[in-house]
Image (cartoon, rainbow, N blue to C red; front, side):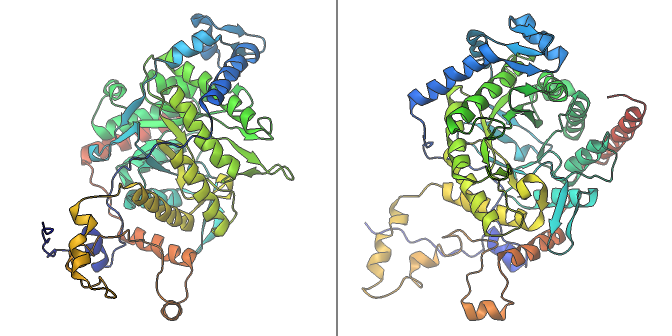
Length: 515
C-alpha cells in the first residue's frame, strides 16, 4: 500500500518564523529525557565494593561536623559523636535506613508552572554556571562580577530555552554588601525570569530568604512550598571528610522547609582524595551519604540529590582539572552509585580552560557526555563556566547552549514508521537522482534536521565574505542579539511590590545583626 502523501505545510515552524523575523532560531522550551540505558563503567560487584568501603569510612573514620545542631540530630539518632573533635561516626544500618527514606524523584516548580522540572528517572535539566567571582566577554574584557552582569546572565537564561534553572549566583556581584547581596540576586531571579533557581545556602538565613521569596513569587505560603518545592541548593562537603557549620545550617534550613539539596563532595583526586578513582569515588560516596542522611534526620522523605564532583588535579601544579577522562568516568560511575540508592543524581559538565577556545569546548563536551551517559538528572554549571569556575563567560554561555541543544536533539528517539522509512520516496527518485525536490523531502524540510544556532555551514568563500568569523566571534554576536530580543516575563504588580518590600525589610534586619 502506498504511503499517504502528506500535504506541504502552509505555515512555517516556530524556529523558521523566528529566523524570518530576524530572531535567533532555537529549540522550543522542553525538559529533555534520556531514553537510552545508562552506561556502566563499574560492575555490580565494584559498586558494592565502593558501597561497603564507604560505610566503613563512616563507621571507622567518621566525618567532622562543625554544626552543633547537626551533631545533636545525629547523636539523638544513635550515632557516635565526639564533641571534642566534632567527628561523627555512623553505623552502616543507620546510614542505610536514613538514605532509604529519601524519594527517588520530585518536582521543582517555579512561578511559571509550565516550566516545572521533574528531577529523577530519565529526566534531565540544565543549569547555569554558579559562583564565579569574575566575568568575561569579548567586548568588555575580564572584570569582577557585578550586578549588571548578573542581571544580563539571568536575562540570557530566561531567553534561551536550553537552560532550565538558574545557578546559585551566576556571578558574584562583588560591589554589593556580602551579607545581603543574595537578596538582590534572588530578586533578579524571580523578576527577570520565570525559571527555578538555586538558593545560596551558606547559613540558614540566605536559604530561608530564597524559600520565602519564591513563595511570594508563586503566591504561596512557606508552608505550602514545603509540599511543592520551588528552590534547590548545593551543599558542598569540604573534602576530605568535613562539613562546616554554615553548610550544615543551610542544609537543615532547606530540609526543614522541604526544599531539595544536592549533597556534593568536592573530591579532587590527588588533593582532596587519594589519587585513584576507586578511592575518590569511595570518599565521595561516604561524604554524600552522610549529608543525605542528615537531610532525612531533619525531615524524613525530604527530596535530596546525590551530588558528584569527582575529578582530578594536575599533579605538576595542583591545579584542578575538569573534562578529563577520569572526570567523565567518575560522572558515569557516580550515576551507578546514585541509582544504587534510588536517588536523583546531580553532576557537572565543566572545563578548566582560561579562554573560550577548543580546550573549553572539548573538555566541556567530554564531561557532558559523562553526565549524559551516567543519566545525571541535574547538569549543574552547564552554561557559562570558564577558568575552572572562576569566571562566567558570555561567549562560553552561547557555546554551551549550542552543545546542550545538540545533546537534547541527540536524545530525541528515532522515529520508525511507514513515513520515516520513506519507501515511496525511494520509488519516486530514479537511480542517480536526488531527493531535494521529492514530495517526502518537501513535506519535511522545515524540521527534518537539527538546526544549530551557532554553527556556520557556508563554504569557505562565503564564510570569508561574511567576515570570516569563528565560533567565538559568532557567539559574541548572538549573546548581544539575545539581550536585545529578551522579553521580561509578566508579573502581577502586587507580587512585585511584596518582593520589593521583603528585600527592603530583610536588608534592614540584616543591617541590625539578624542572620
